[in-house]
Image 1 (cartoon, rainbow, N blue to C red):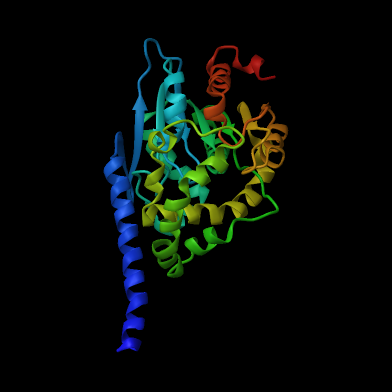
Image 2 (image 1 turned 120 degrees about the vertical axis):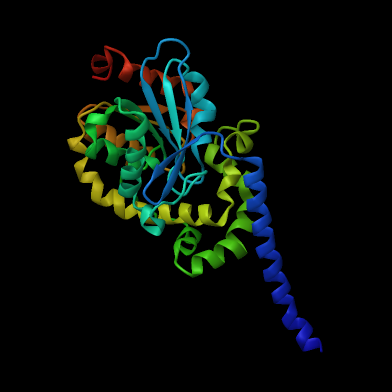
Length: 321
């Protein structure tokens, strides 16, 4: 009897963790329902939130979020500062309330770029300024390379653009694997991240403090759903090979590229990425923010808006030289 009871303990533990994961995801969805509109594409829908300009519009700005987040991260801080633009903030495929569309294949940033442009071609046929944070930098540069006629310019925020030497944390690779990944995500990944989320957010903002209410305003807990958690890991695992292949093309960029980063960014190296693409892009400019970490759009939104204004304004070409 004792042996049977001992064997039953792991079953109870696994069942409890699975239930905990389901409850975490359900609560995240209850607290953060979709607030925008949906674009129908082959394979599913993309979710986006749009803000119309107050008065005469200076143009259109598209915001694309990085890893472990969704549209609300950029929109929460930049949206109020961009009242003179039409602003479109997207959930990348598999994040927020956007479907993954092509499943695991959508981890390829080129596929994400193509899907996002399919959506934007439906609702924003005009040229726009593309603003991208962190992991989305690689995908957004791909848009600039493949669809240059659609962009007025590109603003990169702590963006990943080049290969780096250190690799990813082991758990991202495990969570991205077929079969093993879903098991790891449900039994270990989501319960652990739920407990460690405040510390993880603090590390991303360091050395600056986390803005009050950021986790809620940025809808960060939507990451804590199995499908989203796995999509995030797959995106990160595919990133290094993608930027390694893409980086030699950056001299082909023909629009203004403003790379803004913090000098204290410990997540994405300012030198390996932002400084490098600003140097290689013919119309590149590098902006280094002192005492700022990986979230420049929260630390200095006015600097990002100034860069957008320079691109959108009639004298933008002169201002960026």
